[in-house]
Image (cartoon, rainbow, N blue to C red):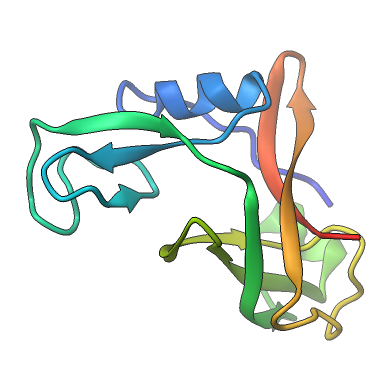
Length: 136
């Protein structure tokens, strides 16, 4: 499936730098000790903009739910339809969610509740993206 090539901005650059090092870092608020993703200018829980730090987290989670994209409008993804779009919750903080197509899992067969682990895929020379795969 074709992947979107990220274009980091000032806010997301540390996240993508870590991905290119095969690490997962998320913003952590020093004021309320909450993780957040995607990167934002202020904490989405307490609103603090001063205490956001980057924290490395373990790339393990679970499939919370999923839908199947059958009639999406993104041209680059149309040839791959239907495909899964799973909501993955991070084990370290289940309030943090990611989306994944769960590579290797046929459409309509995403295993809700299954453990997943982070993996990385090169989408352009020197540019990786994070992806979630069902744990073996």
